[in-house]
Picture (cartoon, rainbow, N blue to C red):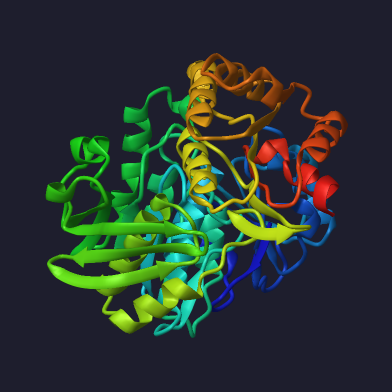
Length: 471
């Protein structure tokens, strides 16, 4: 992961000052920094190498190789002995990750930038892209891309914002406590959103209460006088939110009395979703998005709310929502050989999987409704129950055929049969790597006029099956 600094170059003494680190400077002469990286293979004489500790590797083990590649400035927790004599600057800190967030904050401090930050268990990227589609109609916008939503990736995005940008949208993911806190303190958002609290990360945080608390860390960085948008349909957020020097506004589609911004009259059809928005007493009718599903109306409501609160016109809100087209991994709906394909392979949790089944059920289909569902990861001790509940939901959702992939996916298949689906219409492949028999079975059962949903966690790589079936 490597970025180019969006503003001026940095020097080692500046980096040390930003992150309150100890500077050991063994360079000879000036050492301007134009880039930042976390991969030693991308380091060179103009790049700050940030040595971080991860589950699979420790960046400190690669500091010497970064220096051999020409790197002259390193942010780290200790200086390895094998770097003795290196003509480089070392900034040592207690935590490289925490220090890097401070570095990003210091680098951007004092530079005018309106920021929107958002988090949630599902739909983060969709909401970010919807928000960006609206804002870029009237603002010089920067929005995070790809997987730059981590405790390292988001600060890198912040540091890469160019001088000519006046507004930025940052997505914040997490796996545990403290990560969103570090990101939001760096970004200091004018508007922050928590779009939902799901079941993802139960493996690490154990309870949905803990997930809600971790998501609400985003409020800690809000600028004085800023706004916190919360999902008003989720009681955990109102229960755990702390009052601060910011305004709290609730957005939703179910709890009418508890929401100042409310999506209603939601209509789902084959080409998208349409809804009316009550924006704090002002009526905005017939907003349309190119996404199929009630849940996307809530995502779009958050995006519209953030934009309107930033002074964006209603016309740009309407047009921006229409501009957004999902990428190939997130609810991409298209037709191939007379078959409707719903490719939703980027990630999966119980909430998003149920919503995907609802989308399949909402489509007008001449033939069969078919789903291929795979393992949902990071669900903790209750993973079996949650997979079985999806099987029950699929059986009630009017599916004609159900295929599953993976060990946990097999629980979906068993529960679907127990809930009334014919065993002849359910096929389970436990071995995630053995997709040949699965592809052959689908190929034998699918025909023009059918619609098929593909939904699983990213690690299952369901796009392999789509490629084998449809090229």
